[in-house]
Image (cartoon, rainbow, N blue to C red):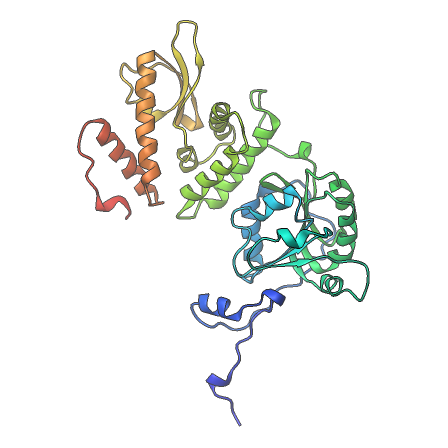
Length: 384
């Protein structure tokens, strides 16, 4: 007897206590053939030579592509630690169909458990304990360790034969111990702020594109410029690259208390790392004063298109970002005019809902029309 099409049961990937078949099937445009993942453990001897680095968001996207769109299973150890909390809030890390397991040794962890599709485990070393049995049978895509508790080493020993990638936080005091415990067959990564370094390499070994830099930018900023360059390269073909990139810049900006200094450093790191033109245009501050000369004039870094509209043609001292920004000396009146132009452009860009390059150019043109005193009429061609 042959079964009809309606009798078939479509297989889905189970995700333990978080399994929700209706969620996955409702978001699929059509039922596809069942898929299986590749071998979980990559049995390469060691890790590719050389230090590779990427923004955390790019690391997560690459992992999702690697598993061909399946939900991710993420284990978050010592999840009450500040580093774990920050990691859990990383943009793009957790989707609603992913399985997030919170691993804790704290007795009162349940009282602070976040609302949502998560499972809390408190493994101990007794076979009779259900949490321990669950932990010893979990198969994960990411196991994150903030490296703040000695007990994490025991968790890592028990888990690493069933996890795709081990991600260890560089800021934790136990990071060196954990890195030494990871077997060669398991892919290990070191998390440094918003960035991920493959192979657990230390920061001093990170290459900065082969360039020789002066001492104007501290090492942390140089590394951040390299990471943002990697993000720009990764997003290059995306239609919403400007929005994505600018949101990442904003996340980086919040980590720096001295905002005026960071605005200068952002332009300098774009210059030193050869950001593509669209990424330079995504810099949120297009006019940045850098100091005052002895004669009272203002020294500034200015987007070239703004400089071209400042009256009396300011003298350009040097060019940055392949000519997109210029270093100039401005009179007080010129500085005020440049600031007004920049503010109007930035306001228009902040209201632009379209991500394309043509929409960006149209928005700039609309800002210039306002500056020229012409009516800013809505244009239907803003988004082709």
